[in-house]
Length: 438
Length: 183
Image (cartoon, rainbow over all chains, first blue to last red):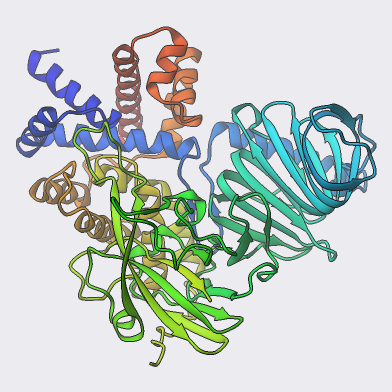
């Protein structure tokens, strides 16, 4: 390889790795402008890089009708094995759900926490116990399973421990956090099979047997419990949720209520919030599966800004976090909505309240905000998820500044918030945040 | 003060053919976005927004014409909008180079676009330890420095190895695609 080609290759390597310094960046741009073959190499190397990420499930296409699943050799094999298993079970006259209720040998778990717990078995914190089945009548139990799996079981719940990597939830709510070694961890419910691909997710089964599957971080695959051989699993990523009911396709869930520590959550309509009733937007027609998180009393410095954990609210440099925001209900929106010119979010308030919108200070406020809200003069800032302190060149600044706008709403009922930018905006800003206080 | 009125939702549903086109093009659109950005960071979000835009404009698609170039136009707009939001920050491509890269990709390709199936075949030809290395760095999202430390290798050395693997896959995919489209 000639020196010139070697230099080009080094520059391309730095680009794909994200390690190119400022000088290398300038040289690469110069070379790309003048060399069509190098441009082809550049884009096709990036495309190979992208397809490797796609194949590994690091990106997915979530479409209104179904989820596109990267067709990999491994996934094809898994589909064949599951299809074969389904055919065998059908041949025996058994459904997948029934087949998994055979008695299990039990799993050795370590009790990490037991808060206000009444259960059918003795659970002592820091002790291990072998469980085949656990019914928790009150409280929260946190268990460590083998292979870097932690589960929170929130009462009332009944869980069967079929294998170290396989639980069955008959009723109630379970949240799982799965580390590297736990890939493939599976939770069955009466209406769904959820397979973890490296994530934090939860399932909740209600009295009617419907299963809510909520992904907070990472990726899971979901199939109906009555899945046929041809059913392609749906893949959910962080910030997405589905409700699975027998004989029906999964339906999106637009709203999850969580506590400030992200430990307890509910898909019921704001059982803990006195102010925010419901949160809905006009993107539901697209059958999006992203959800809003309502955090009663959760707004404070360090609060999570968006669902799927992207960015946190902080006080601006040299200033205190606005006191009037602290303790208000936080509504976590979704960062990627920041370019949606047609977005409309409807908050239904349960009582008179003050609605706060945290709007990117770098853009002209959209018309609906300037018309219906007042600028408070307070500001907060949010860390930028794409900021890389060591990246060269640095693509994004570390912080985005937000102005706090307020509207006094004298009655319970709907409040509509519009798009995060005007049609005439020179460029989009960050997605706005929402808080509701007394 | 009156609340603003949202746009009435579009209740029409694209037909099955459109859905099939959209589904089949996801990996290509993602790869297109990454190559326009010069990196992968916001590509997932931009793909989602592209899908929303395509879904909303489905009734404007001319089914007698190829789907992918039309869809790429929407993806390009999403990337452009994202670039505008980065004003004041340094982008991988300046505006002129971006237009050049985007134009290159939207012309009819000399060779057909990448296929995941070709990539699978080429991956199968790698040695097991090479596939394992790619699996660690892509499938498990381990940082190159962590993998290097674990393997007892230098970061630069491992980076060179990964680049050579990507190069090898690129050459293999090009050869395979060319072979499949010989007259």
